[in-house]
Length: 257
Image 1 (tube, rainbow, N blue to C red):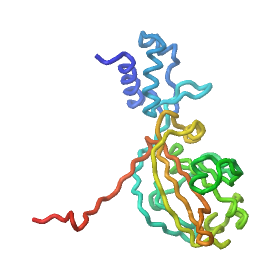
Image 2 (cartoon, rainbow, N blue to C red; image 1 turned 45 degrees about the vertical axis):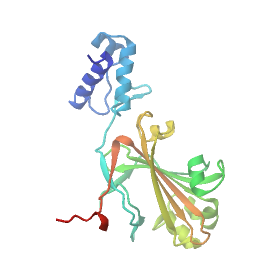
Image 3 (cartoon, rainbow, N blue to C red; image 1 turned 60 degrees about the horizontal axis):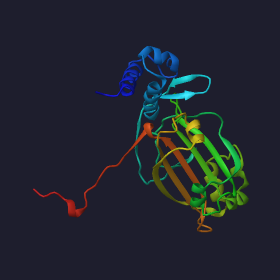
Image 4 (cartoon, one colour; image 1 turned 120 degrees about the vertical axis):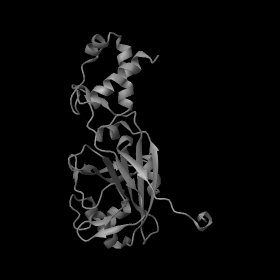
């Protein structure tokens, strides 16, 4: 027989999926749930922990246990082709579909911050160095936050192209400004991993901090110096994305009838 907390989690999940508790609304309080199910608060806490880990609910200060807004899970086919749009500049393999409008959540920010270990390793500079960070939270229009994107631009890049710190960097964006300053053509490498989010990341993309994220890191290398000039770190909640790839046969794997 299933433990009580699992049965309660199953029941609450059914009620959420069935629309009784819609996204953005709150569940009954801990006290109400203990009375409703006739169990102690510890059992309710265990049941809600399961739902939090699944990304169904989150605890919002002053609002209680809130049902999370959930956008559709997106399938990303990670290619390696970088294209260019005359109006927008470089376009990298991403979650966006052609001509799909995206929106920013909150105002994108630009600030000089002590760089943490991960981005510092990508740029090849000392942890804690003051580095320009361009930050934005985006999603397809009408959906909850899909990704947190931090772009760290090396002090060399900022010194050569001060416009990269501006809110409006002009046509083509900060990458065009870096290339115009002598660092073009920039070349890129990308790596992907799964990890747990920081508390700040979880808050910004409105996800539980118990859920893993997919982290996509892109490093741009200057043609002038041969060193990294910018690093972009994209963090996507684990329940929002899956990566797909089309497999090809090598000559050694050809089928013969």
